[in-house]
Every structure is written in C-alpha cells, then in structure tokens.
Image (cartoon, rainbow, N blue to C red; front, side, top):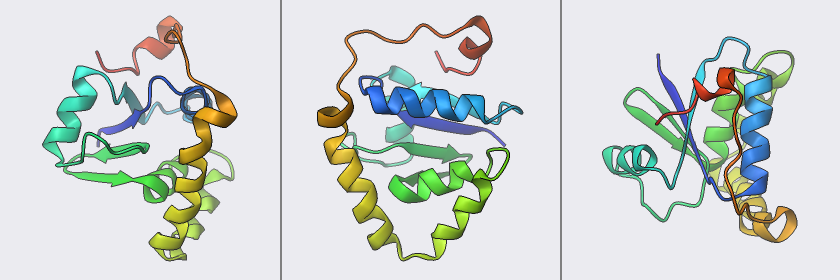
Length: 130
C-alpha cells in the first residue's frame, strides 16, 4: 500500500516533522510531497481536498486523512512506542482537531518559515515525489 504524506514545504515545523517521520520509518512506508508541488496539488484535487487545507495530509490508496487523524494514522506505522499514540483516536475528532489547529495556526509564529527547501540526502531523495 502506498502512503503519501503531503506537508507544507515552507514551514520549519513541518520540515522537522518530515525528518522525524523519516528517522522513525525504517521500512520506508511513507513517501513525501510538499503541498505546494505539482504532485501535492494533483493529490489534493484527486481526493477533493480544499487547496486551502492547512494540514498535514496522509493519502493511503483511495483514502485521505487530515489534521489529527492523519497524525495518528502516521504514528501508527512508526517504530518503537509511537504506535501507542494511535490510542488517542478514541478522543472525538473535533476535540483532537481543536488541539491540532491551535498548533497549526501558530506554527509560523513559533517555528518560522523556510526561505529554501531542505536538501535531502540521496537515500531520502528516493522518498520524495517529483
């Protein structure tokens, strides 16, 4: 099953999260694409997700997940104890998403924006969609 994570390519916090996931995904289950890329925009359109969606997005085959649900479904596939975070799925989504949106709405203020893209290692480059 192909799993693609769409992320804000201009956000320092989002870049940190991508690096976090890569380090905890030794089986390379996840591929990545910036929301701003052609591939990211095409996936948003294919899954009828608003282009203005300000969220990390997980695309698995014909399903897509946003906000806290995407984060928890990603954590479920990471190694060590991170799959235990999936237990938070029992919290009603509106409550989980409230917490998610608080962080998302403040991420530029707290972590800043990137002026340039990160340069992935050759091994990491294979995990990013063109």
